[in-house]
Amino acid sequence: MTTNEEALLVASILKGNTADYAKLVDQYKDLVYTLAIRMLKNREEAEEVSQDVFIKIFKSLASFKGDSKLSTWVYRVTYNCCLDQIKKNKKHLNDVPVDAYNYNKIDTIDNALEGLIKEEKQQLIRSCVNRLPEESSAIITLFYFDELSLDEISGITGIESNTVKVKLFRARKKLAKIMEQYMIPKNNLNYGT
Image 1 (tube, rainbow, N blue to C red):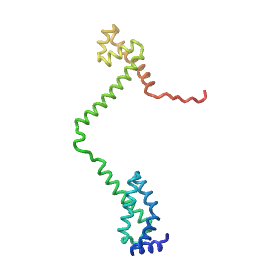
Image 2: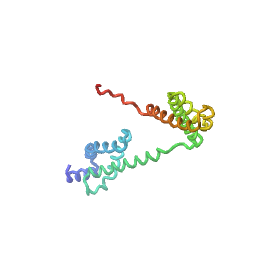
Image 3: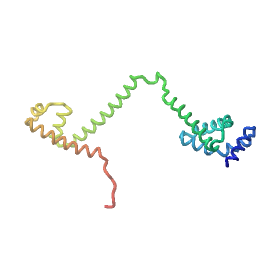
């Protein structure tokens, strides 16, 4: 549509010609809806905003000066209506009834989740420790789970304290390798070999 045709269409609508307004709606409905759906990412809201856009266009058509193309002005009106809807959505996004959650409930949920995670980690570590040779498993258990000192472990096992320290170091290295096998997913791809 040329600028002259746009001006004639706007003038006709302003005189009350509803058929020409229907023509304007039909010409720009896809443009309006496409922009609305891309911005709002919700079909129902895009349809609602599209209707609002055409109501706003009808009410403010007299303010269209013709400085830009009619399509540019329609885009601008659509864009602004979408921004208003987004602001409205964000305003209500954080609306939570005051009584719905209190700090005690949130702390309880957080503690429960942390407890589950900690329990899973401990179970994984125990399972990996069980795969160690007996002596290494015993030293790791005594040191980390029972929280005994090197001297206490030495007294229990009859191994000198410095030797316990070396065996603990080696056991940790073995444990790290075992845990690595659990943590890193195996590549199950077969390349024809």
